[in-house]
Length: 283
Image (cartoon, rainbow, N blue to C red):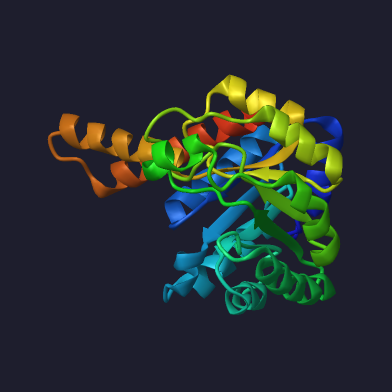
């Protein structure tokens, strides 16, 4: 089927209390594992390209590859820009054929975040493209003890309705205690804050910083209203460790042994999250 915006799938996930994972890719091997997992699990899947990767010389070719593979898939596949840093970056993704874009203005003053998000929404909606924004700021795992664990950057529920109404955004990433990358400490998620946000708006909510959360935490946030969960670091760390093991145990590891193992690792790990989030079998 053709590449499609993930919005309708997320609305269904919101109604039926499961979540669709968003997997960041940086190369063809990780991408292939994601497609294989989606096929094996009969699950809708979001494949994302990170903001900085969109500046690489192969970005347009990478997007074209994903779009071509999606046309051969039996499952809904969406291509999303993750953490777009500017209006121009989001427009580039739209030009490259992305089905959804995330604009991250979370470090900006509220009204500036609203203004840029609103401008992106206006263009994207005219093209049938969904838009995600972030309110509050999800920091990095390396600074978690001094930032997220101290409740810094958490989403202000009082600002949520105003933000969504003013921007017309389709999805909202919230800061409730997670962080990007590997945690310095353990994630402490504020479920009551999430429930408060969920009561105030009726659009799908997004959790960034999935790496390091426990299975119980994932189940709890889905039950409390999360419909999309971003996972990247765990996929690459897990695969990296598996490749190191092959290099240590094989007398002369072949290139194709390593690439096959990388695809296998991404397939297995992405399938794990599709099962855990309840997305498997939804096609």
